[in-house]
Amino acid sequence: MDRFQCAQCNESFYFDMELEGMKAEPGEKVSLACPHCEHQWSYYRPEDVEKEVTLH
Image (cartoon, rainbow, N blue to C red; front, side, top):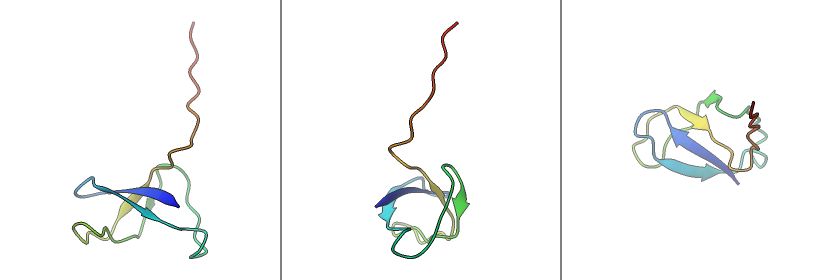
């Protein structure tokens, strides 16, 4: 399952992109309706993205 965040109400929800044949990059805005407020746009927020931290 893939995690998304609504562009309007900021609530998170899950949707299986692979099952629907969809692809998105982390942070990409996609045309997915939010189940909380029914806004038509959400952001892809994967939970397993490794953040690179460089300390100098």
